[in-house]
Length: 277
Image (cartoon, rainbow, N blue to C red; front, side, top):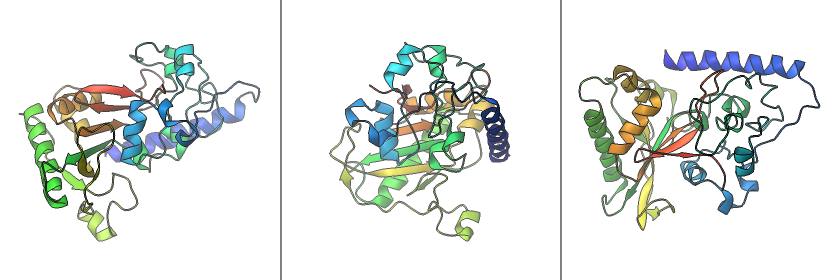
């Protein structure tokens, strides 16, 4: 039901974009968010470095000069439409990041509807782990450890009310074309298992070698949060604060007419936004 709602919402948003684009003035100024590979890595946000390691290829940083300058026409995707064109300028963020104006914050949700809809890994919640090789000696052990830690964290975070779905770990993220080997495995919810060899740890992990990224599927943040009177963000932050610092959570953001949700990376209960350095 949740996925169906997301699909309907994406369709309605796409229609709104089309209608708004037909009626807007072609002279209206726009700011196009740059592809990350056109930006020096030292300018990337910390969140972007994590997204890169997660393989979330459609994510974008908002250049810091636009975030601090308050440019309400900062676009959010590969297209050239402005925020006004999209009919979203009337909305605002409930709590823009510190130092960022509400106008500039309109760019922070990244607007994945402009980047191909909701059928890519970048458009879904993602949880990824990079297990230090000091804690596991094989990909199987690493996967089992991630599953165990996430389930224990859910029980601790939501001791009485939580989703009945069990945690699954996989080689590929949710919504990836290879998450399941075939339609039968998809029907049986049997993702391709992680089988990677030890690799050099990414810069944000305090270890020499790791197994990863190992993706966690069936993240029940929305259901667990709802059952405990929390928003999805609050549930993510609560869970993240309990889990080890080598597990990261990604929220793609959501464009709404009011109180939109900026995209972010969450680690140990703290939020990193996609604002360039």
